[in-house]
Image (cartoon, rainbow, N blue to C red):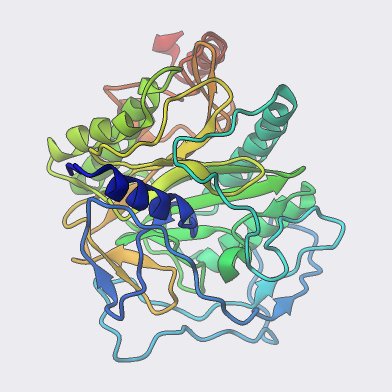
Length: 420
């Protein structure tokens, strides 16, 4: 878009900077009475409307390794969706268990009690916090814990398991590690993680629907440890590789590869706005589309802040990369139309045409010589088939810095003997 009048430019810029991020990923404005939104090349942040706090359910079960059935005494919360609501695809809302309890001994973010984040991003989108060494150390710890929780939750993605059960495991594992599950009560989000299945683009609320063989599931995990957030997500196939048909494999491989390409671009001095074109060019050449209504974000002591990471070609003034920046890249790639429909729960976003969507996410740290995945995988993490088969990068991706590459080579040498 060409703006010829400086005053108009400044007004639009300030208006954009004053807007507030709603949740990871960032979201376009949905204040229109219409329940669907076509893609737009202009990103608007959305303030979540204030909701009544959900009832707390004190869970005294200290274990999280063995799945447990929902107690017959548990009061399930019915979906906030009328029978006349027109779903876009096959996924339906199911009852939810009450909000889970967090002990007062756990350090909690500023929104934990009332659902309202108090910290705001800087006025201008190119103003980006550079973390100190102490802050980076805390970000590393939060990132490692987020990966630990994601790996554990991912092992539970099995036929017949409910996403509510996965949420319980996420919640209790996070609490057991003296951390707070960041999504819980963020703008009144009712659960401790997001579980997005098939056509759900993002922000799926865990519920009592059993997973089915062939489902593709994104688990989005964020933890708040010692005052800092670590955020990551990964795709899983219910039933594993054998349950994935060719179309599923193509969607997941394309999404993973465009994500890796985008992260390989990151290094000091580069423009954040260039990330989107790398993603869009890769996926469109393979017949897919990239969602424009949600974006990646800066992260640290604040859950969502500058920079905004758009996953499509753009010319937004998002600033330049510099050492000490921490942020996420989390493209959402669709088989069909990238427009979305919002469920009446005001969280669950599905594709408008009901076709499937996939997503991956890391929290990244820019170093002097490249980038590091603070939520990178461990030796105990599962090697997914798209990591094994990728023509962009085989094995685990830990970053492009010298230190990250050394760890990556050692790890992949164990996982992929031919790479050793």
